[in-house]
Image 1 (cartoon, rainbow, N blue to C red):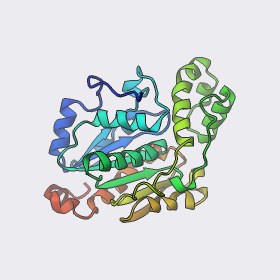
Image 2 (cartoon, helix red, strand yellow):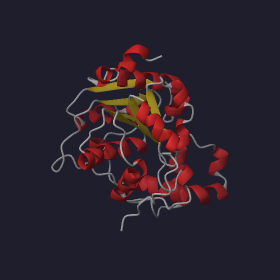
Image 3 (cartoon, one colour):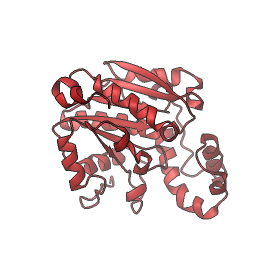
Image 4 (cartoon, rainbow, N blue to C red):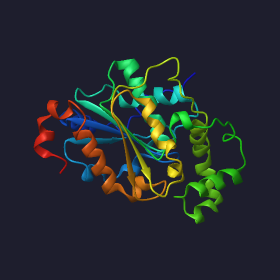
Length: 275
């Protein structure tokens, strides 16, 4: 049975947050990388223009939901996210995801379309190999600790002192194993059973990220939509979501402002621009 998120455990969608979502022309749901949490997007509300309400989401086992068991099954994960989000605001909804969060964002966009009849106005994906370019692996749930540490070291972003800390690894690896398994077993279902999205998709890559070494890893995201597709390159490695926050949020705001119909439906966007 899929593990659903109890109604009482929705800390990332508080009453205050819901009120802001209803008042803002665009609600931007943000999804973190493997092992990450909603604090990845700390400070984004100050960097984004006031007409975008940034709503970071935690996955079960992560951040504010760390007491829950992490999920390694795609349908159960998306069910949990849909439960956490609850009723969508009347205004436009957009999604941004970094690394693993990009895959989660894509699945969330399809789930919202299938279950609510509403496609997000925009999807942003970053530092993630496109679905058509991904390899399938099943080793991460039971591979050795050494293999997990080697992969974390390859990705960067985790201090070497933590990689040598057994207590840290005991706490972090169960979540990371589930997340790595999700990424490695992701299967693109769009070939036969579902249509591509019909909203604009923007892909972001880091100049020094290994994901960007083969341009097709990012450009192949174009197959996930029949609408406008754009590519953006930022300074930094795999975790440019943290090191290039100001440029990234500026690019996201510009992309959302330029989504056909969004500005027309929201006069505040025209008045505020991207300031």
